[in-house]
Each structure stands twice: as structure tokens, then as C-alpha cells.
Image (cartoon, rainbow, N blue to C red; front, side, top):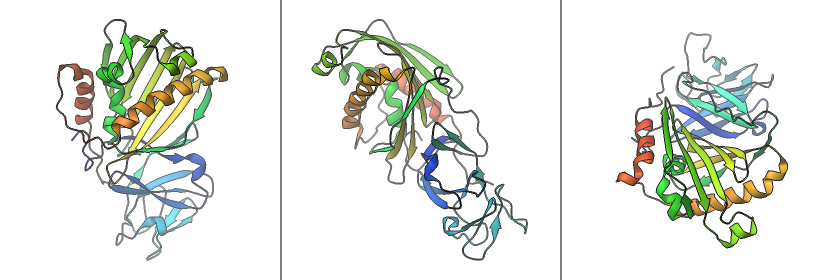
Length: 297
């Protein structure tokens, strides 16, 4: 089930910028091959419900926001924010969070864990990059940070000791101590031969949290939402202790993700894990053990 475009696991998924959901408007949002409807009521609260009306299955994104609920465009059935209807019928609703300027939805009945809490969040400068599409399954994109072999092959780092791995409920982390192989870009950024220490943590099927201690301290939240064609929409957020860190942190990460994206785009995942893939395989096992998103209400 890992990296299977037919399966969506319960977890937090980024669905767009918070300001992109306007008051009194409903919008259809795909998560894998299924759609939900997200709307903002006139009090400013954001809600998410299943796409199909509980009556005859009409598309609720065509409906009208009424108070804190949504009225179906077909037979005018009104669905409250909790999924109830005056006639006793119900539709599924989904938990939402608005954080760091991004709207997040929990695909599932109730959240099993919360969004990560970057240690430097209080007082940090938050830089939100535009959402980007990558032609690869999100499990592979996010799990790439745990693929230690590619850190040497693609990014040309040299390890200073063995990476340390930790596993917790819903999480797999790897702590890396390495140093930069000299390249022209790294000489320009003043990074050649410098040490680089970071911790990469995958959370559930859709989130990653990166804490970089050196050469420039910053944190990063990286998330991905599966799209109907098997690709994913990714959201990147930087947490910078000072704006001065921007000049190193962002170019460094853009160069890193560009190298990854070139390889990942169009990758047809095959789970032929070998010994050097042990950490990545551990993440795949974690995802396999998560509950699938069901349509129950």
C-alpha cells in the first residue's frame, strides 16, 4: 500500500493558503482520487465536508454557504458544519487547522496527532513558498529525506559517523552529521568543506520536519498531498531565527530540492529495498501500518 495512488492514509494534508478560501465560497479539493469540499462561513470559520450530498450525491462544491452550513444546489438540503441535516441524515466532516498561513485538513475521523511544533516557531520569521507539483507519489517525495544513500550520491555530502535513527508512534527520525563536498555553488555560499548537522523527521504519510543545526540554524516543515494522477502538491515552510539566515538557508534548500526533483519527477517506485535502504524501508513500514482514509460519517 506504500506509494500506491489508489490508497490515501489518514493524516494532515496541506490544501492551500488560508487566505485562498474566501468567506461565503465553497471549493472542491482533491486528496488522491477523492474530493472533499472546503468552505469558509460568514463568521470566517473554515469547514471541510465530503463532496457528495447525503441525499442523491450532488457535488456540494456547487452549493451555497448559508450561515455556518452548506446548502446543496440540487434539492436545497442544508448541511450543518457538524455534518447533520434537519431530516436526520449526515455527511462526513473533517478536522481543519489554519497554521502558518496554510489550511490543513485531516483525512480521517479524528486527528491521531497534531501538526509539528518547530522549536524556533516562537519569534521565528516564517517564509512560505508557493505550492509546487512534483510528478511523484508523496510517500516517495517525503521519504526521500530518510534515503541516506542518495545524500551521498545526489547531494555529495560526506558523513561524519553513522546516522542515528529513532522511531516513535507516527514518526521516523534520522540525525545526520556530515560535511559539504566542495562545489562551485557551495564556494559561492561559503559552505564548501563546512560541517552540516540536521535531523529529518517524517510524521505520518504526509509531513516532514527538518531541524538544521549547522552551518545555518533553521527549521523547515515540508508536506505533500496526493493528487488524482499520482503526483503530489508540496508545501514548504521555513522557520528562520533571523532574516539574515535567508541568504544561506533558502538557496541551500532550493539547490537541494532541485537536485531531488530532477530525479524524482517521473520516478516509477518499486519497493526493491536493499540493506542501505533500511531507514527508508522503516518509514515505508510505518506508513503501511497507518489506517486508510475511509468514507464513514
